[in-house]
Amino acid sequence: MTSFDIDKIEKTVEELAEPVVENLGFELVAVEFVEEEGEWYLRIYIDKAGGVDLDDCTNVSRILNEKIDEVDPIEQSYYFEVSSPGLDRPIKKEKDFIKYSGSKVRVILNKQIDGKEIFEGILIGLTNDEVIIKIKNIDKKLKRKDIKSVRLNDF
Image (cartoon, rainbow, N blue to C red; front, side):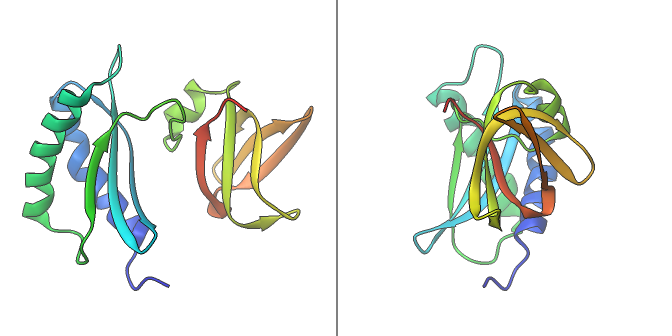
């Protein structure tokens, strides 16, 4: 169990990064602070019309790294990455749930529901506390508090 608030770190970094990223002509898609194999990663996903390339990610990384270091919202060591959202784009913001309604998604949960931690279906919509996906013509409502991630998926 971690002794810090991951949601608070992500929100702080997002508030710091969004105006910087937008000023550089990009969309801030998502901020993730995750642990993988004992190492922490701060990932910033950016996009723009026509997509982003390595130079875009490098430039945004350089500028954001300085800003994040000034504020220093993360106590433990971590790797910092800026990348394209890719084909399995994370869906976090309300506008993304609207934009990608009707798309295939994979929902990964924090705990098992109905014996499963992963659901794949068609994104139907979002309420204040639920994500709704269609699985085999049945609407499945998943509580947002139980969701670890929602990503585009071509299952």
